[in-house]
Amino acid sequence: MEQTPQDDIAFHQFLTWLRQRCQLDWSQYRQEYLKRRIESCMATMRIPNYGEYIKVLERDPSQLQRLRDGITINVTEFFRDATTFDVLKQIVIPEVAASKQKAGVGLVRVWSAGCATGEETYSIALSFLEVLGADLSGLWLSVYGTDVDEECLRNARAGVYGGQALTNVPSPLVEQYFVAKEQGTFTAGEKLRSLVHFQQLDLIHDTPLKHVDIVFCRYVFIYMSRELQESALRAFHGALNRNRFLILGRTESMPVHLLDRLFASVNPEERVYRKLTEGS
Ligand SMILES: C[S@@+](CC[C@H](N)C(=O)[O-])C[C@H]1O[C@@H](n2cnc3c(N)ncnc32)[C@H](O)[C@@H]1O
Image (cartoon, rainbow, N blue to C red; front, side):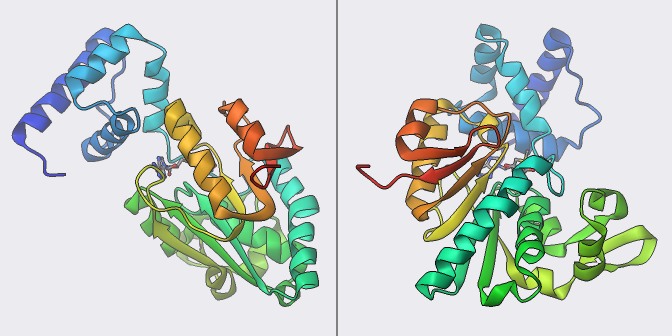
């Protein structure tokens, strides 16, 4: 979208309004980042301009929290919600692997939708390596990390993380699948990299992936209107192979009626679901 000087003026007026009326001072944030984030929030709620956004926030102050979440939206970590990854390792991966082997099909496809800087995507690949071993029991694994934010994806592709970021990664996995670099950083090693693929994909506008065995979409819904949440759930249902798994964020609110119609719960606390086939 081409930016005009009026857009910049409206953006700065909006920031002043936030500071004066809502005591939200974001002057320490990088302005380009902030603008991109606020406009992305507006787009998900189909708000056409800053003037309209002010009216929405005046009418419904709870939307301020949503905007705040929108600004810190890239927050992520390796093995975020360890208990969810336990269910992945104890239930989901063994079932998917066994059924692929039984059917004589070698390819497992996983979609990490809204992957931010890649920690979730690498954590999924590491979980398969941990459960199945370095040879993945002969399976071919592709974990697709997608996000709307190209800057995040650049970091994800680079695969460089500080030692602190790897705190949740078990040491044997760090030793086997990361390479220590200068100044205490680590880079994802070749084997790990060969399992992940990052691409830009906007969950609102772009065509979803197809034929996947597991969809992870965690802490992305917080950002979307109910209408968009429903269309994302339908897209994930269409993306999944028969009987396969959807894993959502532990603490997100969801359009439950639609969720219950499209998916059966496998573990409600960890928000792990199984695709119901149409009509079942
Ligand atoms: C809070 S992060 C969650 C990262 C990871 N899933 C996790 O749980 O740690 C949310 C991510 O969703 C992405 N996102 C927001 N709206 C999106 C959209 N419409 N399409 C794709 N990604 C989106 C953001 O750019 C951000 O990187």
